[in-house]
Image (cartoon, rainbow, N blue to C red; front, side, top):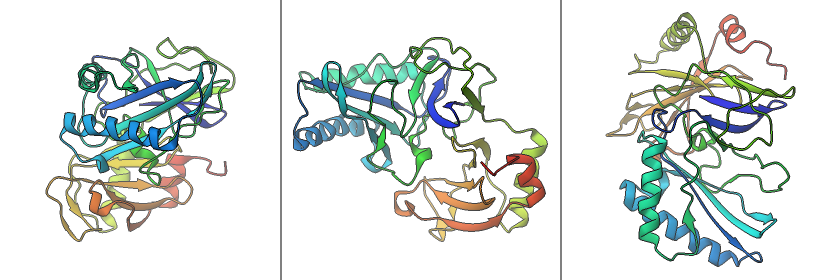
Length: 288
């Protein structure tokens, strides 16, 4: 997984391959208006999109991370929603097919899913980022306290692509990234020894062995440990389907368990702290 940055701020998530990149299902929807529409109309747009989206994936809307970036553009006013479906794993090609079929269901709706955002080397905006020359930051509508839910490749096995490259701000999405002096790429990669050391320290803090742990960096430089474990310290029981995950904060080295279950949303269970020597090795200089 690549997060493309400008002067340290997350800007785009780069999805290398339409056919091969594993992703959580993601969708954009948009419509253009001459003037800013009434808030009730925009809410109706959102509800119509969620209805076909939930029906398509057989899910509750609570599992969908929703963000928006409405605002003035050259053509007038743009209503724009972004959706990331938590849980299932798909590919951009399948998402494109889903978008086309959902648009057929929506028919003559005034807002439709964008079928053009599924290309090789596609770049998708991260939360709070705006396109160059526009004051339309991508703002969370749901999952406001969980930035990771809005990342298309968060915790997806195989999403840590061994590719390199940098992107110049303002380049067209879908093209090969080019280098720029003030733009850098953060790559989620640890050595096998570092991963083993992290899991060993977590186990020493009393956490039972984790099922299929996958460790990646978050856009803000913390660590995310996705698992297939269903035993949850927050709920005090084993979930039927939902899995737990851990976040190790870059700034404090604190380790906290979180959970994908809607009943545990917004809560966490403190585990302890990563040892200072290991934290320094993983995170380096944390003064910035």
